[in-house]
Image 1 (cartoon, rainbow, N blue to C red):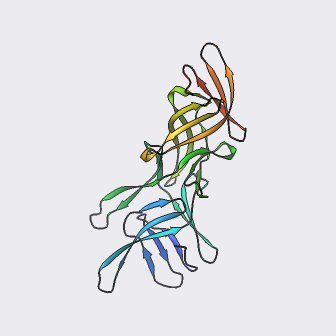
Image 2: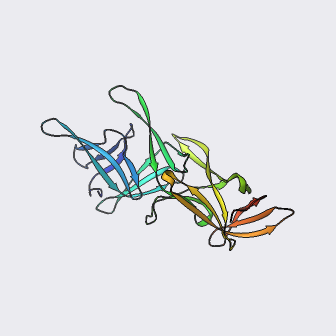
Amino acid sequence: MKSPAKGRWKIGPNHEIRYHSEGKEEEFTLKGPLIGAEPNALLLALTEKQSDQKSVTSILKLIGQWRLDGKNRIVFETETANGKKDVLTFRGAWTVGDKNELIYTYEQTDLKTKRKILRDLVFNGHWDISEKNRLTYWLGADSASAFRFRGAFQTKTILAKKGVIRYQAGLEVKGRRSVREIALFGKWKVSRDWGLSFEIEYPRGRKHAIIFGSEYTFGKGERLAVSLKSRAGEPLGFELIFTKEIQW
């Protein structure tokens, strides 16, 4: 669904999604958790009462684009019929799950029991290193939606046997700034033609590799140092160290 020409989408105080028509008293409110996220859409559960007072819940797909703002917060941008854009800013915290997936966690209050409930919105994408050496989480192969993180790689030297890349990004949650570590776990691989990649596994056994440019330097004994570069050949500012076996 594309947003109507008149009106505005926004996130309510209980993390529900609301639409308010301009010049009218009508307001559409999501009653329940967010259903999910697609590469170019936000899925909502919209509950409405019919004339016989029965409640009917339907799934609404709001079309738009996912990205990060200047504070590394997740935002969803949807375009109205007249070309204007509504920007929904998700002010809670995101984390990286055990399967390297990006998870947004938010809190809702149950209106009946008044209990606070933590819910997760999972983004199924893959990691890569984009232009200007920025860590990027792409939400789809054919989608413009991507989370480009502002930050830096944590160390200048990575040990291949540990199989982890660590990145630090600043994040503001409810007005407070903190540093969030992104730890990506995977397997370093060197092909027979000396191509270098970092293969990451995602939920349901899905795999995707970050491809690097590289410059190899042989040291003493079994030590091999690799200066990492982007696929465009730009230095990334850190090196990978192999100390024992290399997987071909």
